[in-house]
Length: 507
View 1: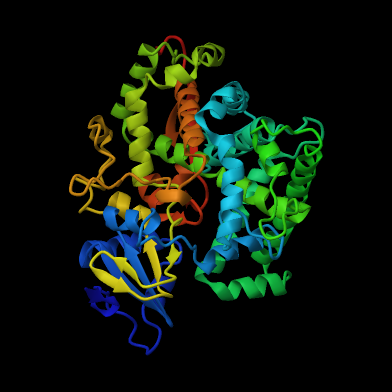
View 2: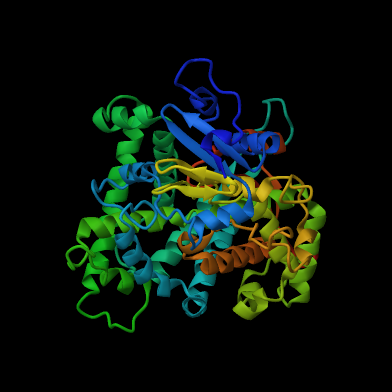
């Protein structure tokens, strides 16, 4: 058995003790791309040295499954860096399902909320999902969600382009699904979904820099007046604390009436108890959990945004999707009422090519790009290597989904690869290689819901509009150059697309 020092490692910093810190500092926003480059050169298991810490990054599907699944080599404990995201919710000392370090508390939260995301629960809330996402199409059609780009020059005769910040529009609608459906919030006095979506997205983007630039955390938290970004962070956090307090109070109000048979998310959260004391979750503990539930919703907007982006670059795939929709009885003529009336859970199952396009988008641009770092608490076998306790192991989802040893032509958009029923597994070992939701017990609890939400959104948005990349994005190169990894893989300025309404004549 080989040891840690036998793991291939890139050339590091010439400055003693820094290791690969300077190289990572140069790739603060796109570390996922640097990891993939290292894997292509050094293989599926690579060792990095960051100051005094060893980090082992993994792109091998089988090794990743052994580390994140159940078994002798599992590493269940998340790294302490996760707790930095707690700075965004403003509840010091409280973790949540994404950031919790105490395994027993994490298990209590997971057990409590899992029934709220079963396929049966999603089916019950399907009408709410369709209603909330129909509002996105209505806002675009009415012009409420549309901005207009300026002509490129004052002498230009071209008119300005209508543009939609599609990720933010979808995020706001997804928060409506959360509040109206899963939490059953009263309509009166409910929070502003669009402001909440914008603030939550910005907060996470700023907080993500605390992971890669830890000095910013102390400066921003200790000196809120320091700079414009610091002031923005505190203003947005105050707003989010107000929103989560409102939701936490609603959850607490459910306690006297929620039955044990009520598995809605609100009722499930209302019953949460601290494993150490048996006490019901405090308001602050609920606020921390609610905040992470809110930011966790952003995976749907970005998955759909990336899928639409890919379809703007592959019009032949868009045409194939439209033909499939029409064949399934879902009109693509801009008639929102008609398509919502025809849309059902059953109709979603009749869309294999749309599903293939969605899978390919999730492979190329996985939302949960950096959701798997773990801390070894004992000597752990990582492939052929023995790794001591204290080492961070990082099965990088982006690398697993884009590494050339795992996929044929991984950088190409090839939805036809999903026509093979076994495409999601590694043909060499049978281990899962399509892992956009993670692997093992800590994989995304709401992945069935997310897939339904993404498909509903794509059906509605594609049946009512054709899409082009907005001029301000600077073409595909502009999009890719602005791609950053926070909790989600996103574009720094958001995904701006230009919609064109479909007509009956077009169909």
